[in-house]
Image (cartoon, rainbow, N blue to C red; front, top):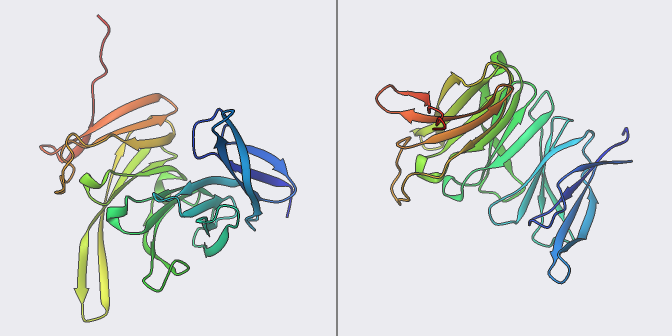
Length: 256
């Protein structure tokens, strides 16, 4: 292993940044805030066994599973229910380039993890019923024509199971799960749809979803959906137009 990066993870805002620091091996550290002094203390530091820089680390909604994404093209999952004794769960190795970012889906979508890679692909991983150490790839979205995928984000659950992906050529692609088709007793096929639009003249570097216009137990589809994207030419906000069937830029407000 060449000298690489140690990862610091702060679950709350304490003034301690999430950052990368030089170290002899790739490792992860858990910190928590001290209520008395507003500082952070290390709970545990452990070797992730990644062979490259750690680009991202994300805890699931319940704070029980940690996903680490590395330049070595692998995602590793950790049981952190006992933060002082993290336990290895699984290694997800399907990418041929660095993994830039990972994101957990809302719990209503199931136990799903998405990954964005320099190889121009997005993978959606699902946990199998056999247990937390058993995962399989549900979806492989080939966006190589748009270059490396820089960022991704899951939509709020009200908009269904949908994932926005930002690519190097300025394109944003929204990948939506349309449902499941069963053929036979054991075969299940997941149907997905991908819609791309040009969001930036240069690179698209980040993407996020707005909260839904209304909170509902019933799915809204893309009704009222909004996206924010950041790229070489600034930040843009997009809204879904049902009439046009496309993402349209919101006009910037002009100062009086």
